[in-house]
Image: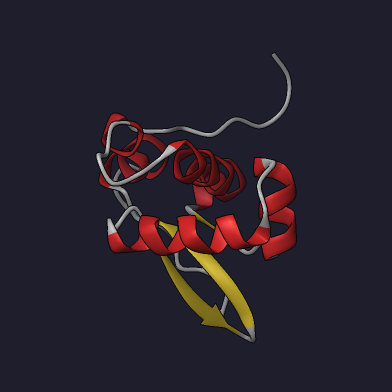
Length: 102
């Protein structure tokens, strides 16, 4: 299998407050974040990759942030998505996320 992949930890996949769209958006963010643990895709790009509307991405990222699976910060006018889930950090970084650009 070629290309990028996203890791979806069981707590995200089985979270009672998250639906399939939320999990799909998480997977796209995790895939784009990779080992760095952060990424800065546009809302339109996230929607296109997840095959959902931009509005659905907004709802999903709000829910994912409320559940503490991601966080969002602004750096140099860009919205940065940070994958904050503990399992994700352990798999890719041994527990630590490098700082996003700033």
